[in-house]
Image (cartoon, rainbow over all chains, first blue to last red; front, side, top):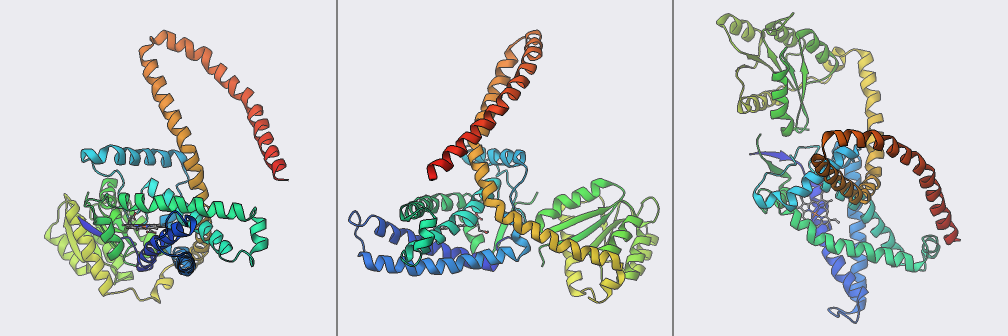
Amino acid sequence: MHKLFVHPLPVRVWHWINALGFVVMIATGIQIRYIGLIDLVSFKPAVEVHNAVGFVLIANFFGWFLFYLFSDKIRVYLPELSPAKHFAASFRQLKFYGYGIFKGQPNPHHVSVYHKFNALQSMTYQIVMLLLVPIQCFTGVLLWDVERFQSAITLAGGLRVVDTVHVLVFIFFAGFIFIHPYLASLGHTWSAHFKAMITGYEEVEDE
Amino acid sequence: MSTSRKILVVDDDPVVGKSFDRVLSGKGYAVITAQNGEEALHKLANENYDAVFTDIKMPGMSGIEVAQKIKAAKPWLPVVIVTGYSTDAYRAAAEAAGVSGFLQKPLSPEMIAGSAEKAMHEADATPAPAATMPQLAEAADVTAAGDAQPASRAKNIALFLAAPFIGLVYVMAMPFVAAGMLAWFAAKALAAKVPADVKKFAMLIGGPLLGLGFILALPLVGIGALGYYAVKSARKE
Ligand code: HEM
């Protein structure tokens, strides 16, 4: 075993603020969307907290985005351009999660500095961070002040469309927040990747 | 920047460079290889490295000579001699040239990792004087390297921003690829049961038919796609 520095400080700070923020956003979001069905807190404070934390997360997202944009670590987020390689690696990884892991087989992905994600992770994180989070931020800001952003909302297809998109992505994130920590717990010990996201160092098997 | 250290491995046997690469690439090193002394010196003149590992017995220049030349030009650069045998005379010459150490073949991953780490400590302790680097490198190469940087940065940023869309295409294609693979495996399993003559005959007939099928389908697929988009944009209005 040796240690490999994979998560720079800005990424770790971003990640844990983001994780905490998402829990708050999902909780208050459920309260706002399903008022009457669930009444944990009243509507107004739920909206206020949802708005405030939302803006914190937008600022936080730009921290993450600018860090990767201006760091050579951007290579971690570059897509695999060969579909053959992408699908081969994806199916290998799926086979591991669905079968090999229960048989004690080794993880087919080997972490290295510019290749810290496996094929499924890198695809998922790319979509999440560069598409879904920005969509969620954008639709969120539109819904935050529908009068001010009237014209932008009309351009996007109307309030219904914007709201539906925001709720659909919300449902995705509500699922993500369970699946992602589960997958993150599948290191050589359950806590390995969590520790890595705190200390920055991933423990890697020697070859 | 301790994560992307560059190591030059000089050996006429490519296996040596490969084993360095296998051990070190996962540890944040970039391993570059040279087959002989001339190539090594050329690479060193054009690019900065953090350490050099060189074999002694090579066609042309010997490893000792390589070490002497490197030490004369870049005294701060750690040079480690990798060798299958070492006589006292070799050792004395190498030490006089100021090499950092010897690695005795056969090499184990631990030896490679350990000595790379040692060399890095040494490199950190005696950093390269910033001003000498451009002097050593030829002016043309410096500008070439300077130009290459922004271009690859722009490309990286473009790929970074395109990544989620490529990801989406992959996600949407996934079920089709999976179904295709299933069909392929099923066809292969079935084909294994069919006698060879029948197979050959089937391919002879089936091959051109399949090609013809694709050609016929192409305009239909095109028209279909056109129609789809036409309907979609008409609906919007
Ligand atoms: C509930 C809490 C969460 C926990 C416990 C958690 C845990 C982790 C862990 C252990 C890692 C490191 C393993 C790896 O690299 O895959 C990680 C990485 C990551 N997580 Fe989370 N996470 C949480 C919430 C979130 C949320 C809400 C998002 C996004 C919306 C998110 C996005 C990411 C991304 C993009 C990475 C890769 C970061 C990078 O290196 O650039 N996580 N997470």
